[in-house]
Length: 125
Image: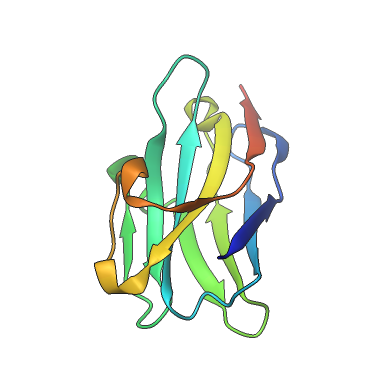
């Protein structure tokens, strides 16, 4: 079983940047697909981005393409989400999730088995 811990959230003005981190403990990410989701108050949890640890393949929500970048650090066993040009509508709790790599990339919360506790991102206008 893999445990996920997110960090890096905070309050930022519109147009600013943040980098979220998702660190794994218990196991390495080497056999997993890792994703970021977000959930705003009163809304469903929404896919943001995902990355395959083995081949680096990525997939993004259309509204974050060109602004957000998901990446991995093998040595640190950590996945990052760099968020640039942030908008107020990006405000949400951001969650890291993982699923076994043999199932491939996916964008639905029900596809993911392991979840972190979430980190709040607030973008002020």
